[in-house]
Length: 302
Ligand SMILES: [Zn+2]
Image (cartoon, rainbow, N blue to C red; front, top):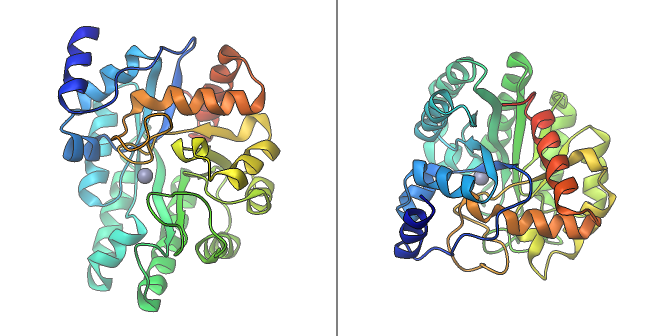
């Protein structure tokens, strides 16, 4: 198995398998459908490669109706996968106002299919991919509708936020905090669900404090390993042990030292080990904490 996986990764131009972790962990945010689209790796291979290195469970995240249906089905047919369903803020803008109501209805249906669908996400505000005021207004409405859905179904809310000046795949935090401010304002207005995950946390310690005070989890991606991630590391430093998650956001945000290549859940050990080292945790203790936190953030073990 291991040899076959190595060959597939090699042929696809992807990095080799890292050293396996000492204890199993969860990839808290990934897109296996997009990994297949951009790197040609089938979801079954992505899952098998991840398992080889100790990433035994994943949260598959939807960004549109097709992706949310894919996530629901993958989670229904794989005991080690849970699904999140939503319309990504940029996808909402591409879709246009006329189609939003029907689309949200379909997401709401998917959200109530069973315990394998654990979250509404990814949803939020994106000022990088969408720059016009009408688009931002639509994003705010769609985000509010997703928050209401999380409340109605008792599900976790998985949040995407990206600022206008946040260039190149979340490459470091920015001075403009408009998307972050919007996200906090809308959550304050609509009410923070019991479980909120700040996916690919890209803010500083000040914003982290606001999120943590509302019970949110900070999910760190490969960007935490970049040299530009000083503010994110300060946020990591102030987070309580039980609010820290790790994720790949594959196929994006590949951690150092594999930055520049496509990402997969099997590369999560780099980020996990980096976060563990920042916290002064040994590997087993870190992985146990990450797994406990993932189960708590998504409303129970799977
Ligand atoms: Zn994502």
